[in-house]
Every structure is written in structure tokens, then in C-alpha cells.
Image 1 (cartoon, one colour):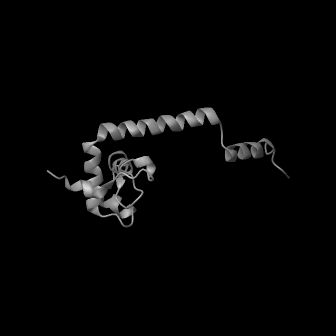
Image 2 (cartoon, one colour; image 1 turned 60 degrees about the horizontal axis):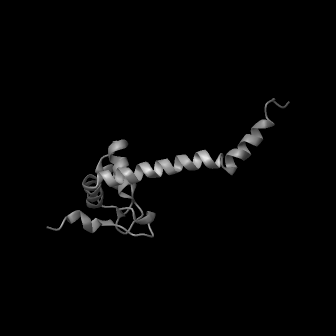
Image 3 (tube, rainbow, N blue to C red; image 1 turned 120 degrees about the vertical axis):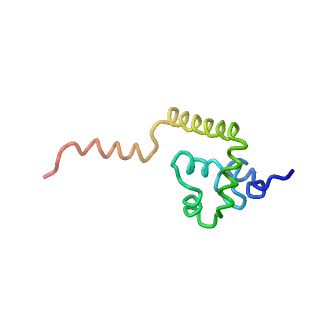
Amino acid sequence: MKLTHTQHIAFDPSVYGGRPCIAGTRVRVWDIYVASEVRGESPDQIAAQYPGLTLAQVHAALAHYWDNHDAIDREMREADEFAETLRNTTGPGSLARKLASMDEGSDSISS
């Protein structure tokens, strides 16, 4: 039996490391899931936010998520853990350092 949503989902190693995306786009399945389940947006609202996406593609992404939610949830957790590790090991970025240095000299109000 062929699943119809597979025609809409691609795994390209050059796009987000091969994570499942809507075919022909850089929109990850997990982006669609987050919009739907975390932000509470309807499939129609999601399709409207991504010009060029069809309602069928949005539904296919949601179907793919639910068929593979354990693996995709693990990928999202690993990405969050990696980002947290970077934040903890690299310290503030150059913009944050620049803003902090600017704040050091502006404690008083100039006349």
C-alpha cells in the first residue's frame, strides 16, 4: 500500500541535514507541527503563512509527523539540547557584548 503523503515529503541531506521537509521547500515537518500543535494554528492559517504551500502539503506534513512523532520529537529535543550547549559554552555573542559595553558607559543622564 502506498501512502499518499510521501509524495509531499522529502529527505534531502543538503536541506536541514536530511530532516523531513515539504518537498521542494525548506519548510520542515516539525515547523508545520509546531505551528499546528504548539501555536494552535489551523492548516488553512499555516498554508497562508507559507506562500506556495498547498493545504495538501500542510496536511501531509502533519500526517508525516504523527506517523513518525517519536523520531521527530527526538530530533527537536536534540536540536534544543545542542542550542543550549552552545549558549552555555560560547557565552554571549558579539552583539550582546557590544550592547553590554555600551550600557556600561550610560549609567548617568547627560545634560
